[in-house]
Length: 143
Image (cartoon, rainbow, N blue to C red; front, side, top):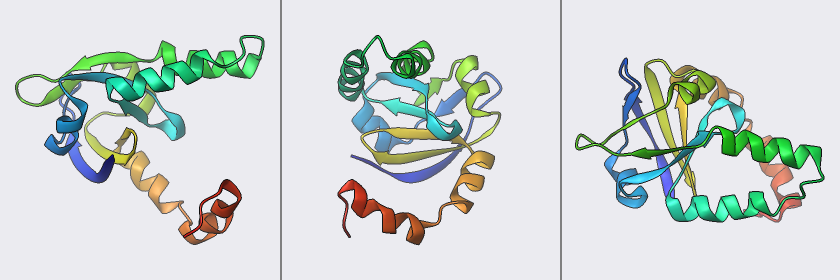
């Protein structure tokens, strides 16, 4: 399970150091794709296979399902960790997430999210945890 928050920087070429705690679980190759809320999602290969299977199971006759599948798969990229512990984020993914220099990597259970620092801070400011917690019981989560 991925957890924690790490601040790093992307260089001019789009290379980003992946924290060693995350690399230990991800391995040397994994998948990065467009995520929700303006960030990137990172999946280890096993979790990606599971997620891809769920996407394949969506009905082709549903326009929303087709768009959802297209969103995640068209933006997906296999990335490899180099000897310095860095990955190269494709330009299309950097542009989507607004990543220029300062980056925050966040462990959120089965995946990692990569955020531009500005978007992460804006998103974190808008989280009303107490208000959201009231609605989590509707999804089966009680604290």
